[in-house]
Image 1: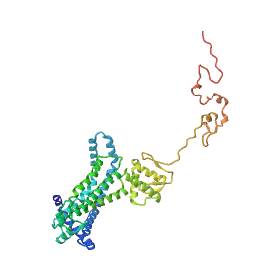
Image 2 (image 1 turned 90 degrees about the vertical axis):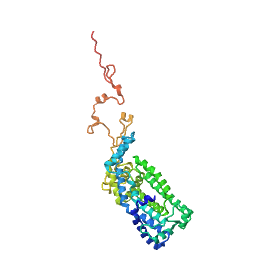
Image 3 (image 1 turned 45 degrees about the vertical axis):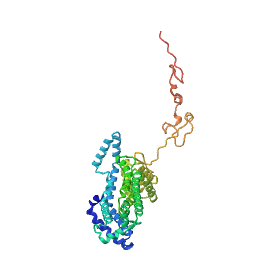
Image 4 (image 1 turned 120 degrees about the vertical axis):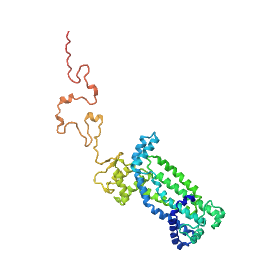
Length: 421
């Protein structure tokens, strides 16, 4: 680990300088040799690094959204090569290459902060070995060695011997209890963050090979933190626990306000958005208008949650516009069919009430608004000649109305012609 940390020695001096500047501020409040001064300095270093990584995080979100736009194409590939997993993976990689997307973009923040992590490890390890590093001189080195966090020295490890811990002014029991609790919290926060991503913010309609990898990482990362955490100094555990909590809160914010389309988080978000928009009669925030604009632009490609959202607005007398705004609809209520096609709420033409057989035979009273005859409306009913009435076949007679044995039905019988002999 020391060899790996030494590779990032070029950033050791900036990291140590930032810690010293924060230590000056907190040392004036809590005392220069206290664990609060040094512990809060490390926490502040984490916050500063994560703030600097916000542009990278935004880029990660955009890359994730670009991946989401490929979901229909990915679904087609899955259906086309559902019996050939190797060809399916090859076509997926080809699609990523053509569109310029990267499914591993979620790892960018971790990779970006790795140099700071190893530099901090190198700084704290040097303090534990009573060696000056970066801008930390002899006076600061002595102060850092005297700092304790909940009774555990800042530079102590879980695997340190009792004699080494005693040199730092603590007991092996205090060090192991504090480090064990911090390792458990660090692993639990990592597991919860990954689980939250997989259960709430994943489109369940499309399954990719990378989703299975994400599930594996959900269990592998906490185990890795638990294994390697016993070799981390207490100060590094403070750093990693803080960055895990930051990541968890940042992800909760994104899932709550900008969820993945087709996920459970989107269903909950659109339900909240429907209540909010119908209550105020408009979309008040820019983020809301951006999501409504994206839903309207999808047209027939909307998922079930998005169709339900559009229909909910229509039932409330509102209509979503292409610019993301919501206005009151002047016409009838519009709905969206299963294929995403909007249908206007024009009144459907009602079919006349079906009469019973007795009413059709007797010409009984018709329902209100039902046509009373199949003939032209300007022709009086009494204009029909009696012969026509007699010649008309009786209703319900069916095939029996046909003449049988050369006889006419219902009139004078035609005499048989004499046969020629």
